Amino acid sequence: MAEQAQHEEVGAVDYCASENHGCEHECVNADGSYFCRCPKGFALNPDEKTCTKIDHCASPNHGCQHECVNTDDSYSCRCLKGFILNPDKRTCRSKLHWVLEKGLFH
Image (cartoon, rainbow, N blue to C red; front, top):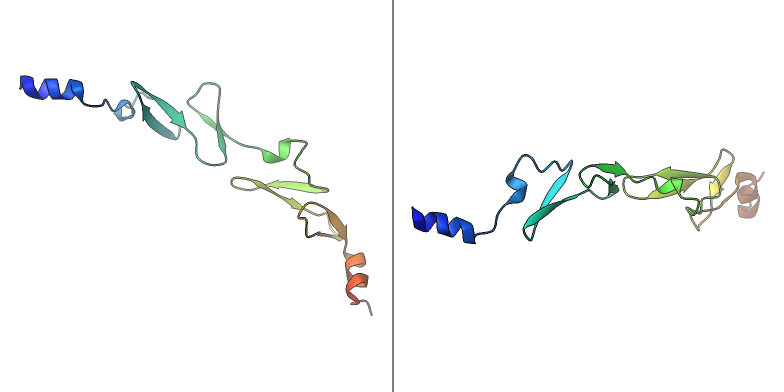
């Protein structure tokens, strides 16, 4: 019995096994402690326990000419009605311009 107790002291402690770790999503064991981790597309809050979905469109540097749309772990750009997305996936051009350019206008 004493041998088993001694073995447990030498073995690694699973801090995440405790239901009191408080991590909202994932608990990761570290040297002598633990830390909380968020899934892709989320950021750890200052409390270091809970997570908030990242709003990629909140940044003024997203580069979308018309509309920015958040996705699971990134964002995409969308054009207003009457426009189509350019190959750069950021800027938009008039559908009428595209029709004339392709020679599809009758």
